Image 1 (cartoon, rainbow, N blue to C red):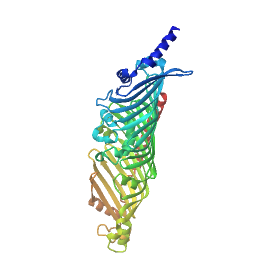
Image 2 (cartoon, one colour; image 1 turned 180 degrees about the horizontal axis):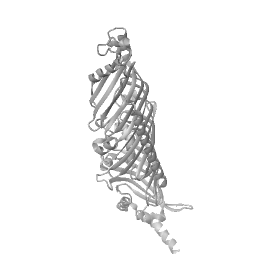
Image 3 (cartoon, rainbow, N blue to C red; image 1 turned 30 degrees about the horizontal axis):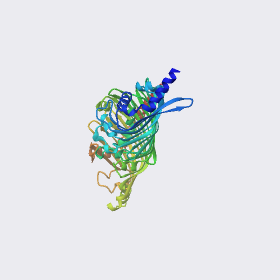
Image 4 (tube, rainbow, N blue to C red; image 1 turned 45 degrees about the horizontal axis):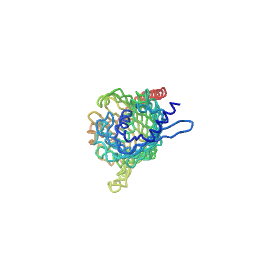
Length: 511
């Protein structure tokens, strides 16, 4: 009876005499101790009680207009307005709450004017690397649920400029090793609006898709991000899906899929981090993509048209860029059945020559002219800081083209040789010597910096090949063992990628 009277007296005091506005600083201190978020509460604080049949007595606390000033572990000041927070919890757990521990509860929140740029800078991001005005007034609202070992956000909506993100986040195991489960979706995300023009590059999208999962290193997490339309580096991806799995030591993003320029994309990535050391492997597959449109949107060239298949698998490890470059190995293959080079028409030029006409630039040069490309095949091998190709082959307007060479990734110098062959006597005899021998053989050498190389006729090789051709020997640049060596290297990397993917999946399942 005495206990019941005491509880009744306490309830009367809470509902009649207790004013939570007198304890704003204490409430803010409690939030800070429990979360590391330092708030200043400027708006009203309300507390009410309600009885739920079969469940007991609940307290409901409401806070309005609380301002985030700092975050534990981030030196720079922070800015965000918590415009509304409602939290309902069992009154019997009030002592645990006062002690800064999580309790069973539910609620809703609304955050306005969250300055993500200040938070990003505080975490070490260079302020010049992004357009802060795009992320300095973020909105977020949703519902949440808490327990002694978990925290969940549901019905989550985040507004970042023109991008709206929805989904849920669940954090389990707060009393030991936390495990994060999430599912987030956005209708659009345009990184080109956030990244300054001076820092934007044609490969930004692929770097983001391959490297962004590294943010999950060091945590146990599983979930997915889906984006209806994603743009980066000028490229536009549709229906992008990025699944993430991390076991605390490794992180995998597999399979990352999207529709890309009338084709399909798939990326599989696994990374392991240990301090500064990063062990990384990725496979990227593009099937049936409109390569010409893709290269045009990357602002690389508008001359190429056609579909292509590209597959690349690359692995590296190390603590810094030079070490990672020296360790890098990989294989890439390019295949295109048919395409076009805009601006000139080799077939038309050869036709004029075969008829003894002087070439008229108006017929084979210009915006409406193009050369048909057929059966394009090439394999590139990465190793020893060089990107090497020994088996380029395709046909362009009746001319057979082969090539081989390499790019030094340390000094960015390219040394590449092309061989053009034409076996049409009626055309060849119209050419000046020594090009009018048994058949046209034109070796070219491309050399210099990769972004501004020079091209010239390789005269010593030309004379040697013309002699070989006259003697009936076949002129060739390619190495017959190149394809076999590349295939062996690819199989080794594929096996390693599969083993690491299985390791991450099994590691997450065991948590």
